[in-house]
Amino acid sequence: MAGRMVVGSAALAGLVRPASAPDPAGGHRVLPVAPELTGLLPNRGLRRGSTIAVATGQPRRSGGTSLVLALLAEASRAGSWCAVVGVPSFGAGAAAELGIALDRLALVPHPGPEWATVIAALIDGVDVVVTAVPTAVSASVANRLAARARQRGSVLVPYGRWDGADVTLQVVRGAWEGLGQGRGRLRRREVTVSARGRGAAARPKEIKVWLPGDGLTRVIPRSAPADVVSATGRSTAGRLRPVGPGAATPARPSRRGELTLVAPS
Image 1 (cartoon, rainbow, N blue to C red):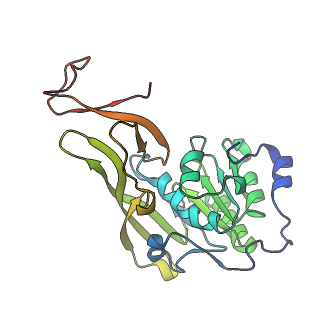
Image 2 (cartoon, rainbow, N blue to C red):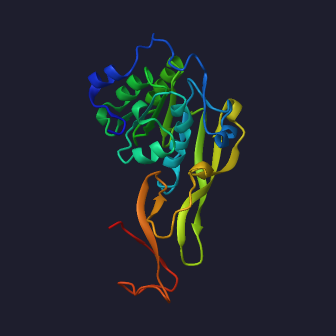
């Protein structure tokens, strides 16, 4: 089973550690992130007690989920517990490929009307809490959750609009690599990530990174289906079929050189 499916306050109580329990990370105040992301964060990592928001951008499927996965990977690999709340389409397979330990990952796909209570309970016992931001979150609720994260030493990562975050990250541009003249395989995506915030993060920054990173890029044989990593961070199997002179006759009229994504059989 990928991750832990958590339902109800009783299950949450069994998952989280008491607030008085020893810090599982040995008291380290900064959790690691991938080297290419350190320049975006004032402490070069996820500082315990901070709120690091990931803006969804427009359109919503703009690489934000891939960025969330990249933020979690190093901390999870180093032994931290992580939780993802309110993202039913979260790709556990893509998370595992990036190095996120599924046995230390709590998933709450549908937190229900008690969203704030679920987040507060997880903050009490989980190192990094990612949550999709409901459309109607009052400033007072957001401030209380951020204050709770500061008190408990958890890192809160809202996925969506969140005023008052210490740092807000957003994918502002992206381009896929791998397609040639009428054929090829989508291999990785070069994205530009911006960071803005307050205090030490008040000065805006931008960097270019690969999602997935260079270490995960691999050449895919032409005879094998391509692993296409979507902007949501989920892997989908398919193949790109060239349409045009010399190619098989398409089922419907098509423009010269057009590429058609064919669903897996």
